[in-house]
Image (cartoon, rainbow, N blue to C red; front, side, top):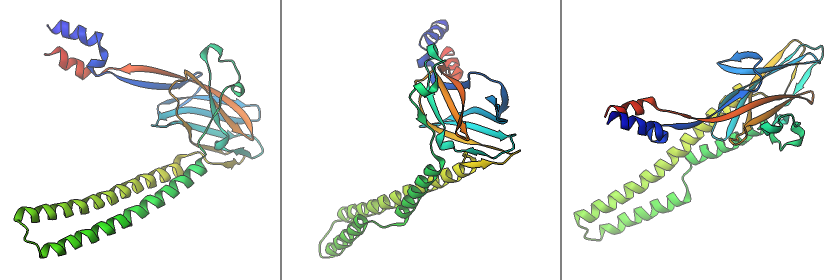
Amino acid sequence: MRQIILLSCLAGLTSCGSTSFLTMAPAQVNGPGRNGHPTSLSYHPDSVEVQVGFVRYEPTELVFEVEIGNDSSRPVLVSPETFFYAPVDTASATTTAALQPRVAAVDPELHLKQLAVRLKQEAAKAEKVSWFEILTTVSNVAEDISSIKKKETDEQVAEREERHQSTEAYFDEQREQHAQQADNLYSQHQTIQEVALRKTNIKPGEYVRGYVYFPRTDMARRLRVVVFFNERPVTFDFTQQSGLQYNSSTAATATAR
């Protein structure tokens, strides 16, 4: 019986705790690893070194880490909002990225402004008493006053008080949700300020490193990431694969029964 269950588990992997996942890696790994992530390195004839690695998937974004070092004698301008990637068919991977549909990187400055606006809105909602809440409170007070002249049963009194308390709890919960959202937005804003690659001029002998965010895509098997310095493109190919991860503990439990 155990063998039958085990074979059934292997035949129907999804029923044994399997989960799908995506992986992203440089097509050419020739740079030093960063925090366990492989990287691709390009040394431009203009004495500018560019290194790119994939960091992680987020719900709506792909996060890459880009490092640009300036070994030249002149400043180098880096504008992350000009970066983009293009899905590339693996059958024609030599096709230039210019011929492919481009997906622009998220502009960090615009993103910070948008987060600041949303943060202000959520913080205001967390402290604000809406007109609907005011009207509801007035209505509840009026109902309490009118009940004095009525002969309510204990059940009716309890029902009215419970209903009013429930209404108050609802408005308190709404404010709490807005406060939590404001906290989340504040954390996002602080994180992007600290880790995102920003528009900058790199002085000779210096380097910059930071995260670049792109809108997420799960369908492309290969992405051609294009990084610019002084408006000069440097391209890096990344391969994306999907697979299944199996929960061995679930399988072990199934075979033991």
